[in-house]
Image (cartoon, rainbow, N blue to C red; front, side):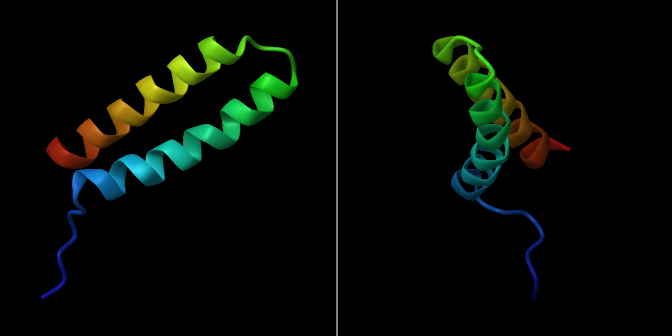
Length: 54
C-alpha cells in the first residue's frame, strides 16, 4: 500500500533543497550568508513539522 507520509529525513532534505534555492539567490543579491542559512534552517524545520503533524 502507498504510504503518503515520508520519513523526517526525506522531508528535511526536500525542504532544505527548496529553501536553499531561495537562499542562494538571496546571498547572490548581497544578504549575509549566516542570516540566509538561519532562515533556511528555520524554514526547513517548519516544513518538516508541518509534514509530520499536519
